[in-house]
Amino acid sequence: MELQKQIDSSKLPQHIAIIMDGNGRWAKNRGKFRVFGHEQGAESVREIVEACAELNIPNLTLYAFSTENWRRPKIEVQALMKLLVKALNKELPTLQKNGIRLSAIGNIEALPEKARKDLLSVMEQTETNTHMTLTLALSYGSREEITKTIQEISLKVKNNLISPSDINESIINNHLYTRDLPDVDLLIRTSGEQRISNFLLWQIAYAELHFTETLWPDYTKGHLYNAILDYQNRERRFGKTSEQLNA
Ligand code: FPP
Image (cartoon, rainbow, N blue to C red; front, side, top):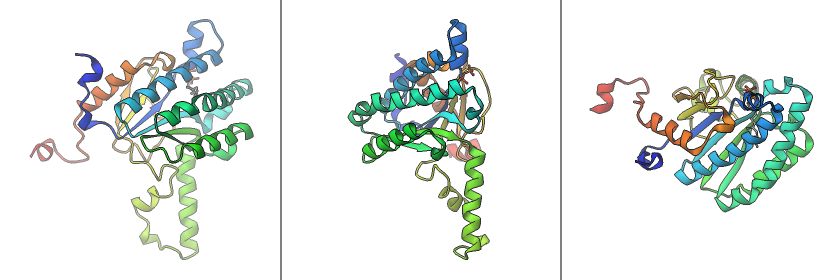
C-alpha cells in the first residue's frame, strides 16, 4: 500500500521537530560550495511543510539556525540569512493559501535587520492562520532559552510576584520560547548524526527520536511518511508499563 495511506490519521504526532542536517556534505559530495546545499535544503523545507499541512500535523518546528551556527564562516552565515529572506518572501503566498501561521523561537534580536524585519512581517501577516503553526528556530539554543527562563522567574521571585514553592513545570513552560506549543511528539534528525545539538531539551522529554542517514537536501515526503509510520509503531508509555497502557 502507498506509504501515505498507511498513516493512521487518528494517531498523528501533534508536534514534529526536525534537525535539518547534511546540507554541507550534500554539496561537497557534488563538488559544490556549501551554500548550494543550503539552497537545496530550502527546497526540502518547502516539500516537508507542504507534506505536514496535507497530513494535518498541527505543529512543525525546524532548526534553521542555532546559536552555535554564528561561529561559521561569515560568508556562510550571510548566505543563510539571505536565503531566509528569500524564502520568507517567496513562500508568503503559500503560507496564506494553506492557512499556515509562521512563528519563530530563539534570539531574534540577533538576526540582521532585514531578516528580522521580514520575519516579523510574515509572522504578523500570517498570525490569524489556524491550519498549522510552522516555527523556525533561529539563533536558537536550548540552554540559552532555559537560562533566560531561570532569569525571568528569579526576577519574579525577587519582586515577590511568586514564591520559590510556586515554581512548577507549568510556570517553566510558560516562560520558554515555545510557550504556545505542545511538547514535541516526534523529533527527526537527518544525515546520520545521532545528537540533539542543544535543540528543545526541555520540550523533547517524551519525544520519540527518529534518525535517518538521508541528507536534508535529499529528504522527501516519503522519508517523512516513513518517520511518522515509525512513530506510530512505537509504544509511548510516559513512564507507565505496557500492561497499564493496554488495560
Ligand atoms: C545543517 O546542514 C543545516 C543548517 C545549519 C541550516 C538549515 C538551513 C536550511 C535548510 C536552509 C534554508 C532554511 C530556511 C528556513 C529557508 P550543515 O550545513 O550542518 O551540513 P553538514 O553537517 O553536512 O556540514
